[in-house]
Image 1 (cartoon, helix red, strand yellow):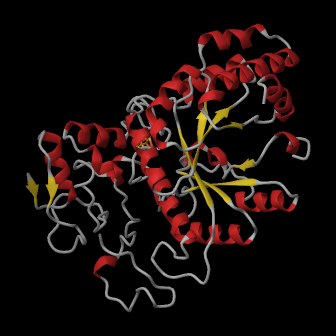
Image 2 (image 1 turned 90 degrees about the horizontal axis):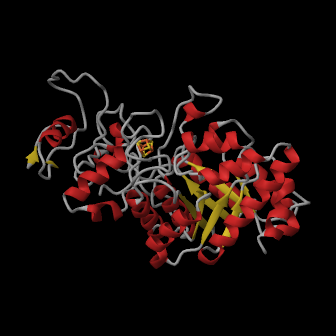
Image 3 (image 1 turned 135 degrees about the vertical axis):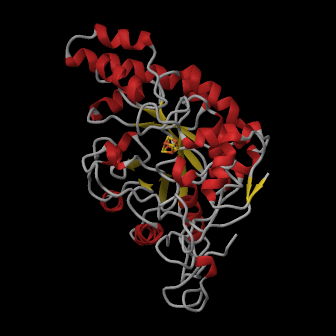
Length: 259
Length: 141
Ligand code: SF4
């Protein structure tokens, strides 16, 4: 983290991503804050009901955490505790409403609080899914309910992203484009088949295929990411890099992308 | 068309009619005479009017109330191949009825007390109500 800090503005901390057990997101955010860096607290609706979500939000605020990203969350069957009870007492739009309420000094039930929070709330959108219609409507609703920025699912097809941007231009809300460095052609194919909204074009997969050693793959992956960033840069307000273990690529990607 | 039955009846009519179907009843209890529907589930907070007569609690495994999650693609639910995404169905239905505007409305969290015979919206304050320590209820909407 210390090595990456000079290159980034903030660190996203996922909330048991893919329903796999991890340390609480707010706890890691607090540690990041203690080091003097800026965390983005990801919060899903999968594991906590409205009481627990609001309690954690209040606790996060007390620990100095200011940025919250509201997500629905993956279903538990995807993860390492597949029999876990899914909660989804709130959905992501209602979680945004909860954040807005706390910011106004009230809770979701309308009770007055002794003070108020001042969270900067964000939400997510998946610009690569078809049909886009329902996802765009939901994005509009999220803006109405206080989402001040959006982070996207990983983008590999800049043209598809541009089509999406044109549909939501009027919202004038900052969008941070998701970038996941490919580790191999196999990973690209796996994501194409299994992850909604991810479409790695065949040409890009072929590029990864030509790289034989790990070092070569890292190099090609860096080039691919930088190329996508350069293409989407004029149409977005930021980049959300998810290096998934290949953190060492971050400086190179940003440099090559001219950021 | 107005259907004055429980949500199951409303949804059954939706499947055979291309017209808007509105629920006239709010199923709060399974007390009294029970027909062939043996499930315990009823929420007392009927939303079918806003969702084109398709219940988001039963059609979407996450029970979302404001549109699809990011896993909805090509009309399929992210949970398993071949399973239709309930929210895509709701969207298609409302689009056909010219009522996509309903999806831009915020719906407050619902009453989850499925095991109780009196739903929150009918329970009397101050047993549980604003101003009571630990209380607080959502305004019925
Ligand atoms: S894909 Fe559709 S039906 Fe499945 S959980 Fe997401 S919104 Fe619900």
